[in-house]
Figure 1: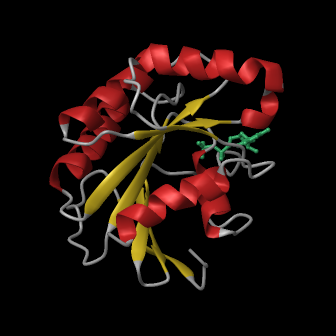
Figure 2 (figure 1 turned 90 degrees about the vertical axis):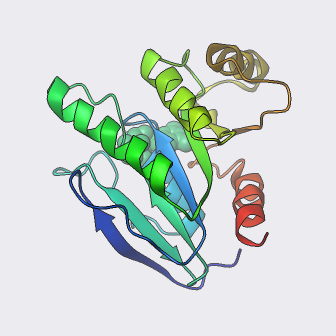
Length: 195
Ligand code: GDP
């Protein structure tokens, strides 16, 4: 998709109702620091429109970016952030689950996993939630530039096995630094919008 305009149109917090939009939505989930803001910025071809972890005061909200008045990229709150209490973590979880369960326009969920590591217990839980809500998530293995090319196949296997993916499940190795995988990612995003 050629990006003509992007607009952070809706921001909802823990207690808010899930908005009923009229455009298709694709959502991005992943643990804090996995590279989700960087990926969304890369998709929108903006340097720093989506907030990155390094910015203080990053609150836990669901952010709806309107793209060309055609669709929303939906930024779900990063999970597994160590410095918050269990009760706050539980609230984020509930908010994410409520969104997955009730959004009528949600077409697909992209789950981001750091290509360097085994999926964590939280990653697996997130994957299961997505599946339980009727989606076959697309996995984006982030920070591809941080490993050697000779390690890519092995790490892809580690992520696939860790989550228990099936052969037909899609995994896209991706780097926000080099933009490797960006075109393929857009191909999938487009496919849910233009259907
Ligand atoms: P978020 O918490 O998931 O939104 O993660 P961010 O997008 O804020 O990224 C967390 C950190 O990882 C930042 O320091 C980014 O610069 C860095 N980062 C994100 N994506 C990549 C990538 O593809 N390659 C490299 N080398 N660093 C990345």
